[in-house]
View (cartoon, rainbow over the protein chains, first blue to last red):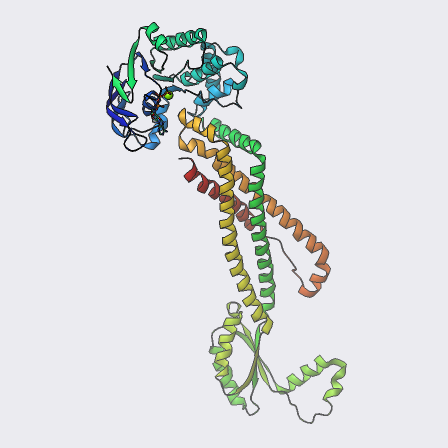
Amino acid sequence: MIQMFHVYKSYLRNTNALEDINLRVEKGEFVFLTGPSGAGKTTLLKLLFCAERATRGQILVNGRNIARIRESSIPYLRRNIGVVFQDFKLLNNRTAFENVALALEVIGARRKEIKSKVWKTLKMVGLQHKINTKPLRLAGGEQQRIAIARALVNDPAILLADEPTGNLDPDLTIEIINLLKDINARGTTVMIATHNQALVEKLHKRSLVLDKGKLLN
Amino acid sequence: MLFERAIYFLERVGQNIRQDAFINLVTISTIAITLLILSTFWLCFLNLNTFLQNWGEKIQITAYLNERTSPEQLEELKGKIREIPGIKEMSFISKDQALKLFREQLGGQDGLLEGLNSNPLPASWEIQLQQDYQNSEKAAEIVGKLKGFKEIEDLQYGQRWVERFSIFLNLLRLATFFIGGLLILATIFIISNTIKLSVYARKEEIEIMKLVGAADWFIKIPFFLGGILQGLIGASIAMVILYSIYKFLIDAISPVMSLSLGAGGLTFLPWNHIYWFLLGGMLLGLAGSFTSLGRHLR
Ligand SMILES: Nc1ncnc2c1ncn2[C@@H]1O[C@H](COP(=O)(O)OP(=O)(O)OP(=O)(O)O)[C@@H](O)[C@H]1O
Ligand SMILES: [Mg+2]
């Protein structure tokens, strides 16, 4: 599902945020991407949905080489990848419903379809009672779940989550992780970037460890 | 499907307009002011042009003949003049007729002529020009040719002011295009900046839309539609204001005008010109959004 061959990324000259990354994630897998702050976790995820472009190397997503993908094809790549951002990226002047619906609106879904899918997804993340609430009136964990719902609402093949439990207390962390496991159980490939080592150890899933831009084995 | 899309985009346009009403107001006023200035110029030009045409029809050339011209020479001259292109009609006014006309013009004061023992007025040809020769340039050309005949002693043509006036009209037209061009560029610049402001206000939303897979055109279309709509509203406002001004002036000065201008008087822009101005407004709005989004959305 995801493959990287000798991938490099440097934001500034002479320093590599990522260096010679080779990896392979199977369809339906659940993997952690761990490492200290600044190791390059966010950068690696960004390469996968083309928020940043690799400096060198090849990246295959769903059988497609995205290292050379045209600018105009990027939107279509992104429709197949749900992303939960480290800072949520919710619109504060929109309700939970509207925030989730945005992901369907931009792909031209019908109004009826949007309504039923958004409702279903919000129900899945346990927020059906907060459907008309705006993000700032929701708790951190609830905002996180809206972000997850938005990432999932159009059934992407891949879910990328950047620190999805970053600001959450342990109970909420478990809740969110269980949600992500459920999603994975339905066949979605899940990749989670986190520096929460305890969490990784508890779940007994494969983890890719980054350090100073290099992948450790 | 397509219909639902259209509705979606229109809803977004409505949302945009409501969210930054002030920016939209600035854009619409800019377009309205530009088009009001341009259409005012244009309306003046049109009216002056008809006015000139009405008077231009009266361009005629009077060729005064030499005293010593014999009737044979006269006939020969007539034939030659007829050959000059652009001559529509010519009528001969003999010395006697000229005197009679002069007497009539003097009215009751024809006693002034009593002391004359010979007729001082020359015979003349009054020459009418064809429609497309009725401008000062062509008339001057014909006058030039007439000057070549030795039987013609003096020439008088048109009204000098008609000539000056048509130069003035050409200048006015040139000014309209020049000022119009500058105004349009300035307007596109202003609109492009106001739309940039409104794109900037939605920076976050646009970023998120892109991250969840919105195509570029999908994000741009509401801005284009918004530009077109603003242009249409601005142009309509300009037309309404122009008509109000026109109506006001007509009511205020029409009694005076109809006296000095004769029948016809002033006219407003014809419908098809109004459509052009509305279309122009929409194009202005579109051009404004085009120039701002091209760079800004990358
Ligand atoms: N836009 C950018 N411009 C320049 N350098 C950047 C940029 N984004 C990240 N970096 C650098 O790249 C390196 C990797 O950053 P990245 O955000 O991928 O780390 P991370 O593993 O996600 O860290 P954290 O756990 O704190 O989120 C860091 O040294 C960072 O300073
Ligand atoms: Mg990060």
